[in-house]
Structures are given as structure tokens and as C-alpha cells.
Length: 114
Image (cartoon, rainbow, N blue to C red; front, side, top):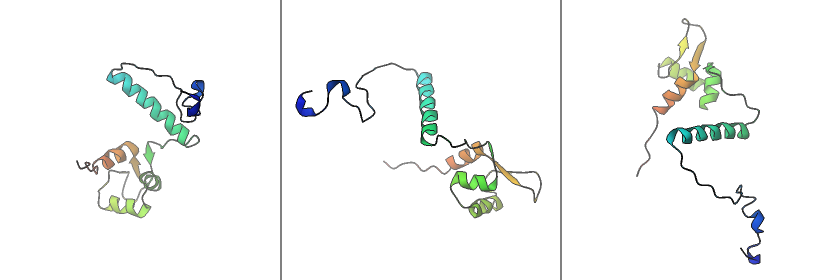
């Protein structure tokens, strides 16, 4: 790189999150999955460093925030038995297992058109 590029060769790529070092590696699926999981975990704490992780069990209010919908929508889904939930007895508090809400949301996935 010459003087016309405006970048010093030892600082090339800085400011764009690049170190200028090229590394090639051959990874199996398990290694790649482990790296991806670590990156996801690091990014989630970087994006929201003080955010508490969502608990395993959610109330109606927490489930509504988790799903980014109104509490009224969650209550209507409960009334229609359209969403999986737990309730000790009629009239008692309702709880949701976060992983089951995730699975339930996956049923609404729409395939991208080609």
C-alpha cells in the first residue's frame, strides 16, 4: 500500500474491527458450533451488558415482554389455548416455560421465497 492510500501498513484495517492478520483453519461441526455459541454469548453481554438473562419461568407480564406483545394478546392466546402454559388450578397464576415459548414461536416460521 502506498502513501496515496492514507493508511499505514501496520495500522491497516483499524477502525473497522480488523487486525490485518489472516488466519485459516479447518474446523469440524462441533468446533464451529462451540465457537458460534461463544460468539453469541459474548455478543449478548456486549449488547446488553447489565441485562439479566430471561428466567426459565415467565409470568404473563414477563411473557408479554419476552414475546414483545401486549399482555392482552397473551391472555387471549391463553383463553384460546393457543400457547403452552402452566396453571396449578383455575384462577391461579399462569406461568410459561421460556423454551416452550421459543418452540411455539418456531411453529410460525415462514419459509423465504426463492
